[in-house]
Length: 201
Picture (cartoon, helix red, strand yellow):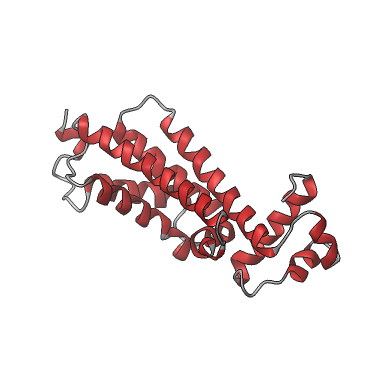
């Protein structure tokens, strides 16, 4: 896929249509129509519908990577970094729900070798969460014994937000992130008991 401004517009249009209608239910003609283009004109910028899907998923992966990098760049302890990571991840999802829907639901429709690259990126992203949690365990901030399970729990909890979050709902994205981070760090312990951060001081 080309990297022109028009290609960016095409990716954005596909992102919204795939997210609302589903990848299989969306046609190239519909993507072109959203931009007042003829269906054939689209192929000057993208080789296939699958290539367009890959571009949409790659762009979401870029957003998650950038957000995670910003969260980890702070000089806070692992507990605070985990809160930042949750907020960053939830923020990417809630800022563009159609894109998140495509990222979580349709990425497997990409064929090899594109699928191999996407799997590698997802694995690398998950590894960043494992590394953060492992650092927290090593420094005494977290008490979990299974870092892999902890990372999967964090990501699964955050990822499911795309299914139920509504921009016009009662909860803001910031509130959702704060509540998720609080539950991940402190679980369901009574408020009167010390939090993880307090118990390790």
